[in-house]
Length: 110
Image (cartoon, rainbow, N blue to C red):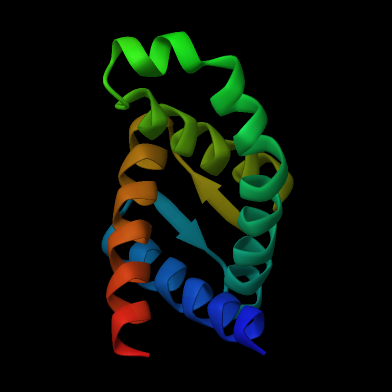
């Protein structure tokens, strides 16, 4: 039950983040839910591999390279989902940051 609530909150956060950022577009709430599910799968499978492969760079940048990995995950989700579009790397990075902040706020509320 908690996973479904987390997906709904992430979908709502994605819709809100897409509304705030002009370089990101989501067709509808169903697409936002699919995006939340795809991001959950990518964060569970692809992110650990990327983090492991980039440990030296992450240590060198004091962890800031993890923001780049988050943006790459968003761009990969853009490639996989038809109704979700990100205009470039900077918008993916901003979307990742805004989505994280909104999701954290919604998690605190609910």
